[in-house]
Image 1 (cartoon, rainbow, N blue to C red):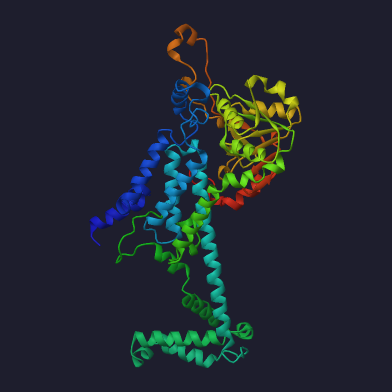
Image 2: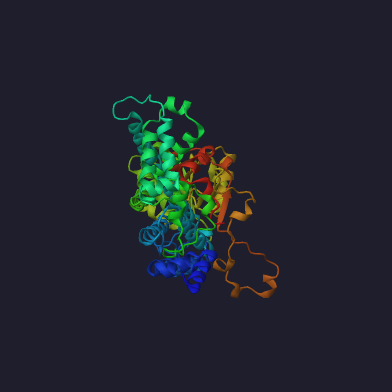
Length: 508
């Protein structure tokens, strides 16, 4: 290997730059990643961007509250589920068309992509990082499944060898034969007499096979330590799944072509089975990604199937602003029940107006109220339905700004609060730093026209424009998801089913 080639390889490995690796090996996939990140930086994939004001002004200019039905709470035309589906499609393209060799390299690639998306603004859209974590968990599951299958196959082959063909496995080890064969292999004279290294290797294989064929419970108990050592070494050689061979497959040797994907940072995080080359592993991972995509496509359908179990005839349902999940849930319940819906308008973007219009067109008795009237009307309400921006690991909820007011009013009047959400919004994060850090404060320019305010007035007023509210778990009664209904105290149990604990903080 030339000096220049060694420097290129060393710089690629030390930089740990997934983008550089994609640029060198898969430029088309890097272009897709760049396009996705550009949309993310411009706020087209986030519900907490400065695009809110621009979209809201265009909505008001086209007919007020009901003019632009494509806007959701003042944000341009993209459903949260569509955002997540775009993320899955991007990752499916990257995973399916890049030149990773084993599970360890794939995990390094996913971690690098996740960090890149998080730095580009994915922290404001937690569903993007959740999808990356879920695919990483699927990779770990596939490795565990493959490892279990290989262990079972090895165990079956060992049982066949122990049986010896005639079912009699209670034979002692022939120490004289073993010593003679070992001496013939280790001795230079023996190698010369038998034709050199090839003959020695053949003799060693014969010795190992003969020793393993006689290995049984009795022989293991009565054998000498050197024989057991030989057996262990033979087993590792025959199985071909030793740690050294697995790790050597994932790193380039001096004589082979260099592999620029950096594994130095992640090499110690994975067990040896992650470094084994399995030809069937890529199709298995792609199938797991396809299952995640199918879950997203059937999300609203699975949530709507539970509508009749939570909404009963004659009830009064209170909701806040606009949510496609809540809207679809109420329309599904209206096919079997007659009930009334009260919608808070969700100022200053007034998404509740569009929500009420859509529900009224579906034949649901709908009333719009001011946000400040929520506490006064709460005594007449039977249930409160809220959407979710993210579900925290402790069972807390990040919801649209103003939802915390409804949760407090519902708690005061003992009205059950139900959150409708998909499991892709479940985040492995705890609100350690308090409620204010989760509100995602943005510029007030989307709700205040500074040109109309004098400098004297501006000096006396402080504007705070939170996009979200954090609702603690003690104010929530139930989460209705696409896989069932759960209490907030059970949410942490779901984390282990969807994400691996080692991947929780991979992108921070």
